[in-house]
Image 1 (tube, rainbow, N blue to C red):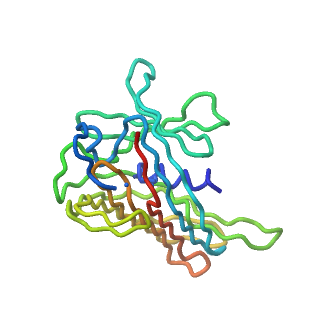
Image 2 (image 1 turned 90 degrees about the horizontal axis):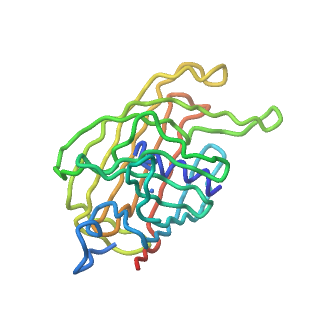
Image 3 (image 1 turned 135 degrees about the vertical axis):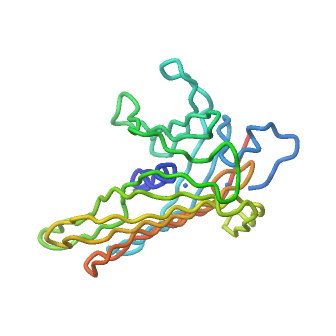
Length: 244
């Protein structure tokens, strides 16, 4: 279950997974530590995850640890590891922080996305927009015959926007002010086969980031126009945060 959730945490990086899934501004911190997406070694996040599909509601815990900087094919990258052993790769460039891909226990080498996903742009400007694609993961239902799993994997182009830099967010870890709020919206037609047929698939995702912490909250909803498989939702909230 945790490995399934890790896919959503990397799309907010897909997206942004997100794309994909953080406290207070520490005085005396370096520039990197004041980032909306800290990459330095020694950071640890614990999240509460609420996943709702047509199969019901699942509550999970999710833990991430920063592993610091490494070199991959001569390029400096930053690694972040989840509790199930999945390692996520990030690039810190002049344009911003990009999610490159991941490696889990079943892979010898990292599996990188065809197009790197912008997580946080270098310049933080309200109304700044860009585009990226995501794949739906929440549209699923188990049913007869023989507990068949019906899923819709649709590629959806999203418009991403920084809506504000002063959002206030309340999560189990506390109250966070001056958060960066990033929204993603998009839709695409998908032929989902005989069970659903041709339908319009929509994706909306909102993420909140705090300086010196990172992601504190993420909400994602995927919808269709079919009553048979109408929506799936994902909520990720910061439960606790540690740094060396």
